[in-house]
Figure 1 (cartoon, helix red, strand yellow):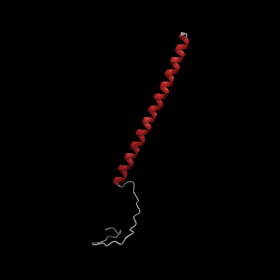
Figure 2 (spheres, helix red, strand yellow; figure 1 turned 135 degrees about the horizontal axis):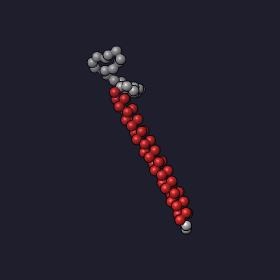
Figure 3 (cartoon, one colour; figure 1 turned 180 degrees about the horizontal axis):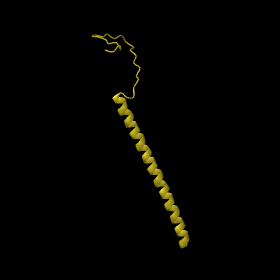
Figure 4 (cartoon, helix red, strand yellow; figure 1 turned 90 degrees about the horizontal axis):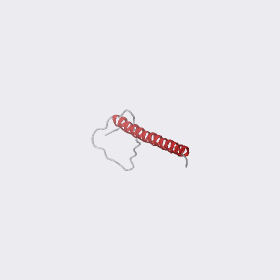
Length: 74
């Protein structure tokens, strides 16, 4: 194996390693971005900025004691 062939294979290996490192870096950045967005969504929902709609159905009879306000909440 000549010196020229060795440097070509070494260059190919280094390019392959650098591509793999770039893919891993992009992958890690994507995961961190998704986690950050998820955390912000949870924070904004808890602050009431992003509303959460939940449908609640009462299937059994319920007795309510006390006053009920205009929004029919107890």
